[in-house]
Length: 584
Image (cartoon, rainbow, N blue to C red; front, side, top):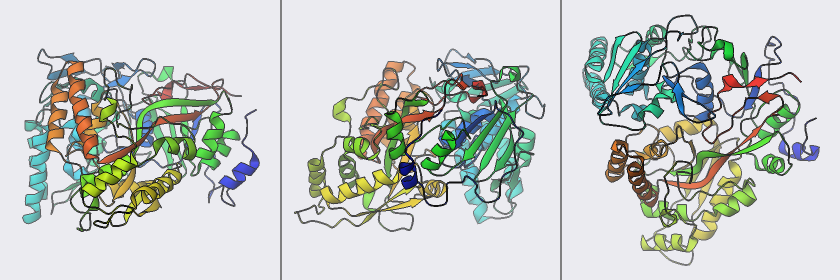
């Protein structure tokens, strides 16, 4: 029998009238399958488009639906063959040749071809589609020139409308002529890079490099004949009758705001090895309600439970179904570093001195012990210490907690601080997403900034998708952020602040920082590469486009006697298709 929290605690945590799990019209019953893997998440999936996804919630499902060239073994974290065998590499380490497996099939039975990968990566390099990870494709030879050329063409078309379709044909031709992707036959993909990049195989095993079914995905693209801008039919990646996948599962239901169902892909090359044949993801907002759903046996797994009130009790309860795992991820606040805000008004945080002062005035230890109560490792760096072999940032280069030094930074920059005259600092606004336990830290940090620095900070909670939109559009002053590494290399963290990276919501732009990233990317010796990346992180932390707060731990709830073959690791590589659920 599962242990339960005291009812009085649950009653305090839950708003009135949520004790029954019905949300509006009931969903149709699923055929009974006690071996299905069921779990609950607090935030909705935003997209199942592999080239446009950026969130962990999205990639969890994308990794079940799509298989890239390589995959990561969750036990060893080593790259293993996926849709292709391990690549051949040229002597100068710039050309990779992948051979697709004979039995790679889409969920409709079509063979997976090299053209499917090429079309997917073409979509990632279209500025029209605004892929958040487009920067990860720029290391392919000709990719950046193509991206810039397409951007220039769109600007030209805005001045001379009506040439959209002709411009699109030129775009297709220019891509083939410019970008270092060759498909000499259906099973061979040759990738040429701008320069040697030691971590390229890691990218080839990351979800953004997954293929899409070229015939149907290309048919879902529409070219505006006036502007020449291409758009993707938003229904393609949400409609089970249209979405075709090449991974272990296929999408069979997506009831928005409520439930997503994946069923085994009968054409998957390893279909006979699946540990389960159905995955059901429920969207349940509010940690207390998700916990009650788990306790009642309605779901098998909760992949994250950050609420302080529940999580702290669970960690101390010595339960065999509580798994608190260190994670290669960092919880942080993003400071808008652009000269102006989205409305054109001056941005107070354009001054790095103010950003640095705010970053130095966060009492991280008190926060994790008294507010989150989960005792996460405090974060004075962005890359989690010990997460990447051979990478270490010295303590003196990290961000300290030092309110006195923060006040002195402000005074030296001419700002007023408690007891000292100077230029007034305008009221700042901190925005965070609802759910997930973010309110407590936001209120505590804002109060501390007021007490120690005299800075007024208002807070606002918004829905997750709204927060993403605000960040992507630079329409914020301070915003909550979180980042989980995608592969064990410092670039997965530090490329986030490259000036042209699609995930660089801070707007931070420093050519010297970009140059260090370039040097790290080109260094084939891991130790040499790490030294360049360490210099880059040191520079970024000094400029303070973010304030790291703590490094994540992932609290999973599942009964290991029922939910078997579940591999937990810092990099969230769980391989859902391996998990076996045994009936009670």
